[in-house]
Image 1: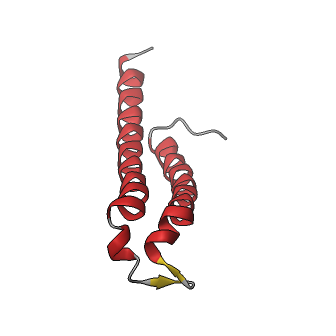
Image 2: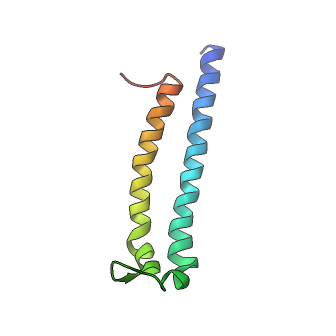
Image 3: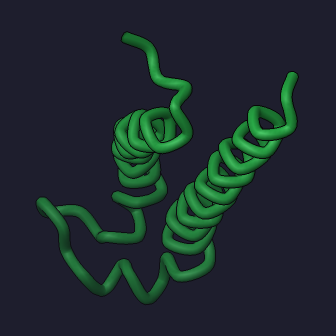
Length: 88
């Protein structure tokens, strides 16, 4: 592999790892923070007839995770084009 391709591959994986770490931190904050740590404060708010803390613990973190998957795919397609590793 040439030097420029190695640098491009390093930059691609650096972007990929940074994106994954950000998304994992968001998922942790939503699932652990909203579902466990702040559940009492969130339960004072009603969401579709359920306490918000309960909703996050049961369904909210799953919805956020699914949305993050779609965001990850969209963002990785941008990174693929940026680093010229996209599929035609």
